[in-house]
Length: 272
Ligand code: DGL
Image 1 (tube, rainbow, N blue to C red):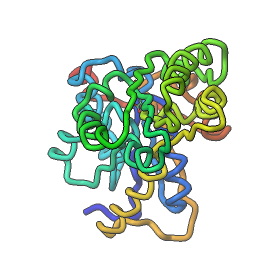
Image 2: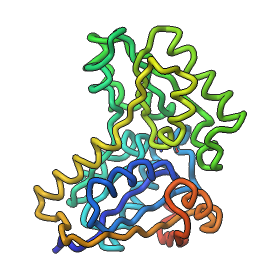
Image 3: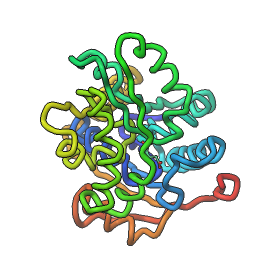
């Protein structure tokens, strides 16, 4: 039987999900959080759906083994590829990403919104459904952004290559009238200052990490699993890549002096 004292498991293809972890920590200060960065397999965005699904299952099993009471799929790409099968296979609460198209459609004044995401997210059923739902009210410009995840994984948040990539992706959207940009990949909030600078002050840049953290709170409350001890929770970090390298990036994006352990993967063969 799961109890409120158990941790919450959070995963992403790499360090991008830390943008979601940050909001979870803000919303749920007493929770213990276990974060898995599947950096050895990032980026997911151009990989086969079956591969991403297999990775998502392997990581979810690992998090369950660690005692997770709930899972957060802090990756839009893994959400599109795997969340339906994860939910039909596992009984614990699983919270996942949805690009913030609904709030973007509600607040645009030009009637044009841009969505930045991976190729796989934009090709997935979840996005197609959102497009069908809101695409008649507003013009939705979908922009795949290959290369950006690699830049964030390398800790390059504002270098020349990152700027060049972003200029190529963002400027055409603004030129076509987008006044709201949706960050549909959890790596991209770390690029927000540069995206905002390139898009200009009249463009609003939004993502869904705070909504996901609130949704997680609701689900925990509904299941009687909310930790409300008044104590500060702790974070544990795991990676499928070299822990020293991942620790250096996590220290930059999260906070210094964190420890990162190597992910133990009994079923990595079947995942890849
Ligand atoms: N953070 C992941 C997402 O939200 C990145 C996907 C990738 O690794 O390409 O989609």
